[in-house]
Amino acid sequence: MIPNGVSVVIPNFNGKGLLEQNLPTVAAALKTLSIPSEIIVSDDASTDDSLVFLADQYPGIHVLKSPRNSGFSANINRGIHQAQYDLCLLLNSDVWLSADFFQSLLTHFEDDRVFGVQANILHPETEITQDGAKVPALSLSGIKATSNALGNHPKLTTFFLSGAAALVRSDYLRQLGGFDEVYSPFYFEDVDLGIRAWRSGWVCLFDQQAKCYHPLSVTIKSHHKLGYIREITRRNKLILNHLHLDGWRRTVWMVNSRLHFAAAFLTGRKKKINAFLAYKLLLKNYTFKSYAFSLSAVIPRIKAGLEPHITRVF
Image (cartoon, rainbow, N blue to C red):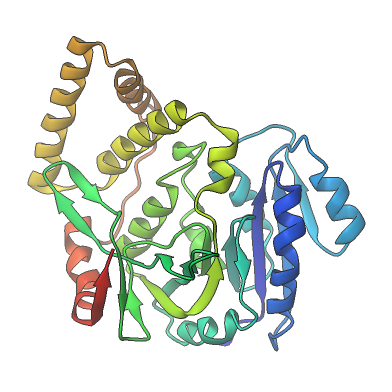
């Protein structure tokens, strides 16, 4: 497939300073393309001067304005559904791109099985990779998605694509409905999307050559208290396991999660109790989706394209 263009979708909330710093690098990287491109900024009811800045300095950017703050998934989904080109770069506002960012990324889409490709996300000061290929793991406590890897192969598979910087087929993305908004306001929605892509029969890749820079979780930590972040993290991890575990692992996890809730209840661990109750409430009326493959079936496929080539895990 020869893509007809690239749509860059950037979710924003009170990020004028980040846009001011990072949009020039996006524009510079897009200029290297021989195909059309566009930038879409989906604004989640910002109260700073983000919209004024964009209208003044970047009038060619397509700005989507939300009347209320709806969280990451709903906000970026608005941009995804407005993207007009075959490929969609999902990009955090606090990420900046190398000048040759797209050079190697586009070659992966010659294979129609490829859902998307994650870029090599580096720390801006040390230039050390902080988000590499994601190593899949399952334990008695559920899905593990925190280990990163680097390797010696240009097409490493990855468990999921980091929401900070990933180039994805717009059509496949829309077929999945974008990011699942049950995870709002943030966290684990990118893990879920990757798992759904694999379970649909597609492939997620990591490109070590496509470099970008990201000060980790700047936007979330600047807007929310640590206790709230931890509670949402616990809730969303429960949701992820509930939706994707299968077989005996799901049974063991269900028992373990309820034992942990009982222990939290007996010891008065309020945030753990709240996380569990919120998880149960959110899935009460959830419309469950069916996929071609179970998680246990796709894990070997991911490992086959990753583990033989790993040179470092972190």
